Picture 1 (cartoon, rainbow, N blue to C red):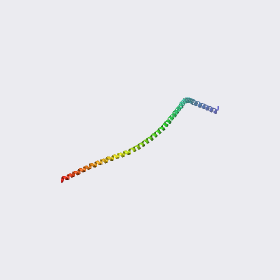
Picture 2: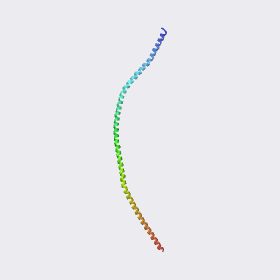
Picture 3: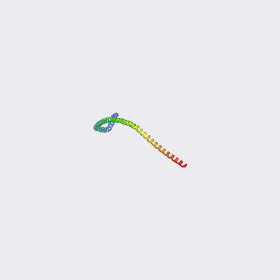
Picture 4: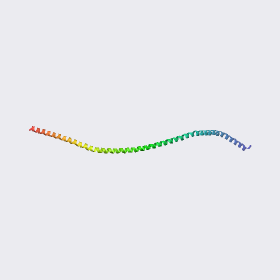
Length: 153
């Protein structure tokens, strides 16, 4: 055997050792990949019904949302009617207020005139009574002065 053949045998032995050393992690890696594959398969088997349930739940939620939308549309229609009624009630209230103001003005103007006339009559009567009282007091004072002059003479 020559030196080249011995070197080739050594290289072949080293390669065999390398393969044996790498075979153990590769076998362990194969077990890990098999476990991962079975776990993914099991996860897929469990996820499919969950996704079906989620899909059913989403459909039910969509149905409920459609019902809510229908209810909201009905409520909006009723609110529009209530808004119209409120506007009409507001107009009626404004008309009643205007009518009350007109009636009040029509009734108050004569009442003010009657009250002013009554005040004027009372004032005139009081002035007349006051003038009569004043005249009586003057007459009494004049008579007392005349009597006092007569008595001094």
